[in-house]
Length: 296
Image (tube, rainbow, N blue to C red; front, side, top):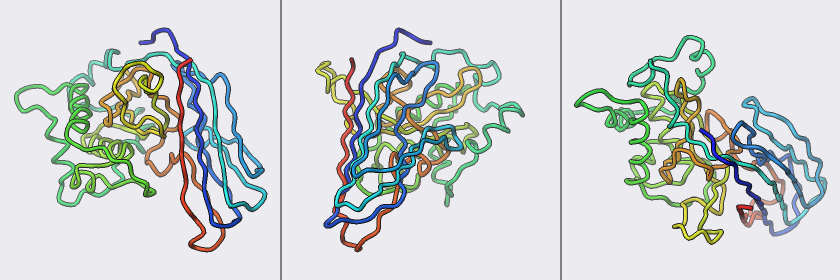
């Protein structure tokens, strides 16, 4: 269901710092929001320093990707992505599911399985069956299990029982590591729920993007976890409702605070920026990232 759209202005700045000038290989930048019936990009801009050659492509998931090749050496690489969007409030959980999918377990049609195969197959091993056991705790033992209710409870359990922690390290924890540590970043929580749902036969995919926090605009709300940086969540495919968003970091299931940029079967395919540089091993000093989202 859709409500009146709101407009957001977003500026995403990433700066890589080095001891001395280094040369750069191609960088893959995923920054442009993913258009749909609920989200429309009104304006977009990409600025790179030092000067760079930029090519816009679509990846296998139809995400917009900028291939950025800096043309000169520098001690700093700065990439600034800015855009204005129109986003309608959505909540696919309010949409009726196909009768065959209302109760868990359910089966996708043959045609759906052909298209969803990459989102149904788990991509991480489950030694000892710990992940499967964790996922199965959300199946009711006192009656029928509603498909929607199962995913809602799983989403809330991660928010309630795991501790959020920003991580500067590249990559994502395995689901087993997140279960063992009971802590992780938004990417770790999304991957945990993705793999758990897949082991129950529910198609899921990873989503990267941005998160609007009304508190940062003086809205008086409590600060939202993950605001001020890139964010990650997941979508589950439910027949009749389509791709339904779940944000286990904040226990969101829709709305207009989640601004999607890229979708993928695995987090490694949806990194906001990835690239290479050439210099001495200790030349790299780190990076700074800033994401500012304002409601217009």
